[in-house]
Image (tube, rainbow, N blue to C red; front, side, top):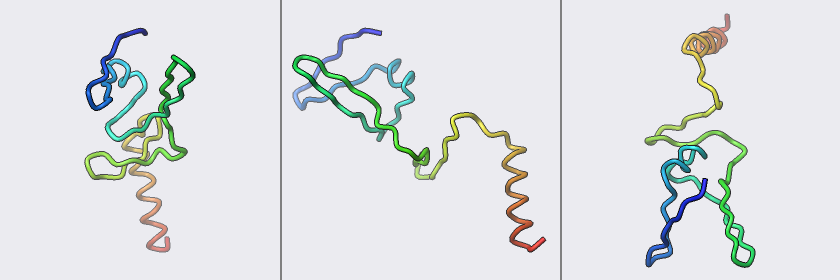
Amino acid sequence: METTITVDKAGRMVLPKKVRDQLRLEPGDTLQLVFDGEQLTLRPSRSATRLRTKQGVWVFSAGTPILAAETDRVLEDVRQGRRGE
């Protein structure tokens, strides 16, 4: 994909929504900037952990959706363990 973006007075640029969606970028994500002469490269800075906050709640992203039945099973296992069963 090739597109043109504009730098404002403060040096800010807006990444097109298509790019943000394709790279799964969300507000607060960071990018690594590498420049060599006239070439700039931006890369998402992915942390080793997939834990992040969404609307003030810590959320773990496994990459694929987890079925409700699976979370129910895990919760029940934890509860049984706490009861000493």
